[in-house]
Image (cartoon, rainbow, N blue to C red; front, top):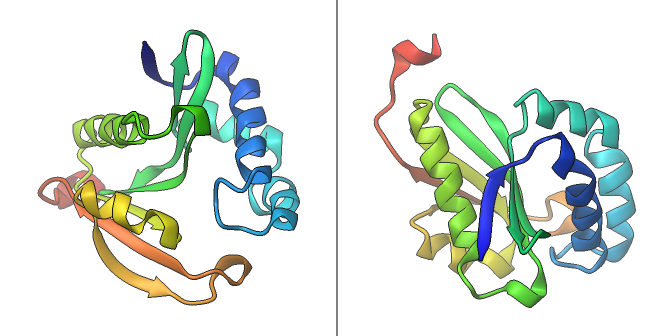
Length: 167
């Protein structure tokens, strides 16, 4: 049975190991040599990322199956009603079981309670169909973006804007 939770201090080390694994094993389309850069330079240093997650600046959702971390969704605290999803990955042994979909649903459910009206993600061509099936709309293509790979901006409107909440 899988369980999705917002990560706490005790979850961070296991998440970080899995995050590094997903980069090194090419879960994403980035070249292998880019994994080192992403982990050590592109994202805040490990301790900084941990601080940001624990302070709620980068909410992290993790999925466990029998006490084993099998997936994650790293997000950013919403700004002016828009929440951004950074990294989404599920262990290859657990793909096609709805876990990534459940992570997105959990994120959406949580942020809607906070007054968020829109979700936003960047992805590469391998996940375009997935996001479309989840109700996201293609907003644009950023050719030769990070590491020279084409990226696609997707968004999903999940509520009415509430300007008074943001000002």
